[in-house]
Length: 148
Image (cartoon, rainbow, N blue to C red; front, side, top):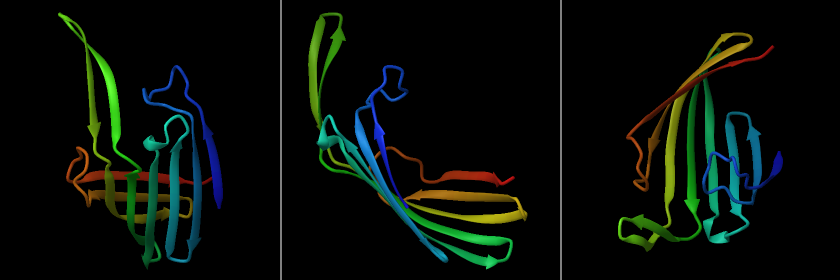
């Protein structure tokens, strides 16, 4: 499956850094193995682009129980340079700096339980494999899937 999404900045966007960009996506699946790849291109400033990626496996341990294992990541293309005015009591002071490129890689492990023919429950733990960014040691996640 391949998908291309065209993004555009909007004044009411919840992200203050929203920019125009393209998110191409390519994903495939084989029995017991999942693949996915997603890149994010910032059309206003290519150095702000990131590469997002994922690969994982689903192991069917028992008919109602599956074990999930995924490596997910997001890597910057270049360092982030910024210049921003900072208001003080003495006036406006220009502030500038550079933030190093980041590589965020996580291990997501979990279980998926089939409750009924139409309902699944999954419980996951996301564990950072790199130390870039401010993140907790473990992020719990979960959900309920239902089909009608």
